[in-house]
Length: 405
Ligand SMILES: Nc1ncnc2c1ncn2[C@@H]1O[C@H](COP(=O)(O)OP(=O)(O)OP(=O)(O)O)[C@@H](O)[C@H]1O
Image (cartoon, rainbow, N blue to C red; front, top):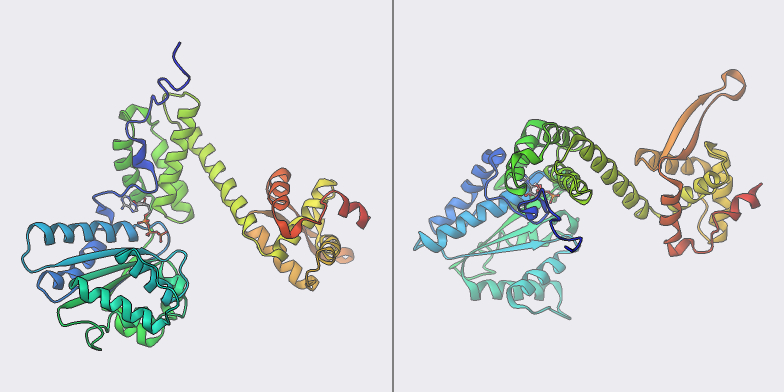
């Protein structure tokens, strides 16, 4: 008898194509942006080093993918067509790095396999430039999610000025490709950084539904065994969902991937519109749960107080009722008690994130105008997230409410 794994995928040819890590060779929707990158890299092909360039735009807009595609092209040129270009490229994710020192440390680690311990920031920079001197030639550093360094931005003016300041030898041409989806951070950079980093600044505007549809079509061609696997509405709906939200290609691909996995796990031979709708609802649920986990302690307490009321069927509840329970909980775990006005802000934020639902009431001249809140998610989902937060260990969501009564 065949195992339950036999014949599992009746729809996928190459499932990997829908994964987060798969990089396309071609991004036709970003031709203009890629041309701008090409102009920034072109001086390197003439032996003058690449210009510094800054890619910005919201998440999932192909900034990282465009940098990868254009750098691969330049690497191909250096290896196969050029006697002039001696190229080293380094891709550094700054996701968990919050200072220039940490970024420098990571660069040195990626170049040498060694971490720098006990060095001052300027010693660390010296060490990095020493490595650049050993390598020589054109060195392009892609610093992805560079906004994580906040105002500690020494690296962003030191590398672009390394040659003019004599930090590196004559034959070394280091430059930066900075990538960020935080537009505020970019606008608030120090003038020193703006001067050095803004040789070129490339803006990635959000994709529209048509472009997202084309991106999905190309992926689908590679991912599925044939075109009949996808119902006619699948791509238009997945791209419309993503376009209405953030215009993110990552999000659109995520809907298609989840819908296809749902179809596959149910043994269905085609992916349909209802799989996409189900996928969207599941992804939204995961997003909200993630948001719940990431709340501050005050946010968690506001959620805990509302959840306790939900468990005793006392929702929707007015702010002052939630506030009463919140105060008891905050006291119990020794947390500073917010004023009622601030609690209102917390509840409003939870409403904005889809964790709660706020309804407006108007009792005319007697009661005036007020809001009531209830959970916007399954009660069990809130209980499960809250029970995994150690700061709230001493709070019993079932008994606090009865204590309040
Ligand atoms: N024009 C496109 N064609 C095909 N795939 C694309 C296109 N644009 C983006 N993608 C894909 O969408 C996903 C997100 O893209 P990418 O990581 O490059 O976005 P980003 O702008 O760098 O976002 P973030 O700032 O969140 O990292 C990747 O899987 C990428 O391959």
